[in-house]
Image (cartoon, rainbow, N blue to C red):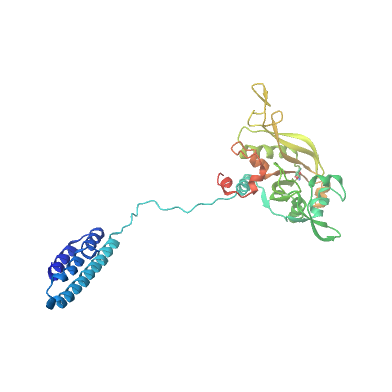
Length: 347
Ligand code: DAH
């Protein structure tokens, strides 16, 4: 085929092409190793020698032109391709993952809301505390054996003559006298929710945990107010059918003192299911935490006259109370603080 005819043929074929795939096929047909252009080039042997030079020049020119036509078309088609690219605005997007509060923070918010409804004001006191507020002010004098139960962590710091050593607060009760001193005169209705620290670690204890401490001081406050408040809390936090009972106990900072129990949700307080002992509770009841009527010495330490005023207090573990909810099935408290996202996402 003579160069000019080949060029015209290639030109019309390329210009009619509508997509890149066809264009690539044409490239092979014309410009490939055994393509029409190369075949034309080989024909040079049959050309009379005086015309060889002219033919070779033309053939090369045609080859370049076809190459150029191919490249232009390729650019054109890929430009169109881009314009055709479209976007479905109705397609659901990728949602960013949504975080949430840690379950202990959720429990703390819930607990403070429940008490806020009956007028308790949230207070916050130091985590790093004087021995005085943690013990002495709570009727536990220096070297009192009751201190042993608190597995205290001490800070390596100079000792203060009046306030003693510095400790990591072992219970939220350390806020009781601070609150009395802050408010000055009753009425007091405090809920103090904070971190506490003790040297204990097993399936029911972590070195750091949380307590919520209630303190009410006013004229004529009696055990009835204490019991009523406990009942109110368990009905709000657990469910309407839950009841509490007060079981005599001993704490240095309250007199009388009680442990508050809640009836078991599994056996409904009976202690047995179909004649078998309930495995969740002890004889139908579960222990929530401590409470009592504020000891006169504690009121005195807070500058309040025990002959005019009385009060009640309670201090319970946030994690413990939360894990006792029937919709939460956590059998080892340490999971709460391992920060395993697979665990935390469930709540
Ligand atoms: N502070 C006690 C503890 O951590 C709990 C407690 C008991 C708090 C009786 C109180 C109370 O306010 O009245 O073991």
